Image (cartoon, rainbow over all chains, first blue to last red; front, top):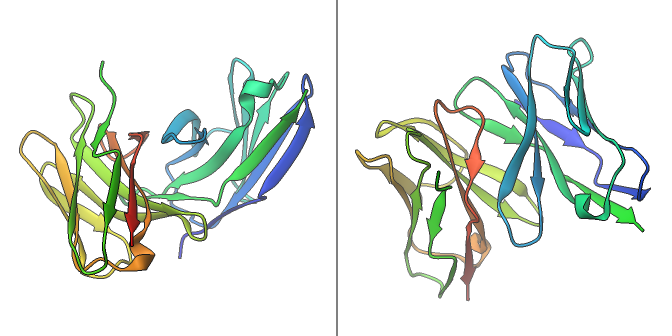
Length: 110
Length: 111
């Protein structure tokens, strides 16, 4: 079945770049997403990439997609303390069902 | 444009009771999805509705049900509550089932 895996924790210093990695199993994915969740809140759609693209840049965010290896990454440039949150990788499977990874908790040290 | 609105924000129930959660999608969005979020299981897909039709459902027991109204508002119902149903229930709306926009969730505690 469909599955999305990502590492659980990442710690970086303020000003450094953060890279969060994710792998997925579904071959029929249409879109792949990155969401952010802050304490006590729902998920916020950060960015997404269409499955036939390799890269997408959106201000401080860069998404890389390796479709052959089913690997997705999110790079946050110049990471700030306000970026501390849980980041979810998600697979839009094309079946009206989006599958989420367990989330990567990003800690940003001042 | 108003975001996705979920009510109530917090709910406390006892085992055996039933509960109804409500979700109002972003104006113009016809798809509503529901998720259960727990620390142990993460985000689990419950079901998705589009124009009052359920298009997909997750692996949850029949105690979990939902519906969508003609104005795209959606409700989910959990009957015969169990302790393990304690979770954050998230609703998300979208135009077509992709690019989900989430509400703040309903935190359900079952005692």
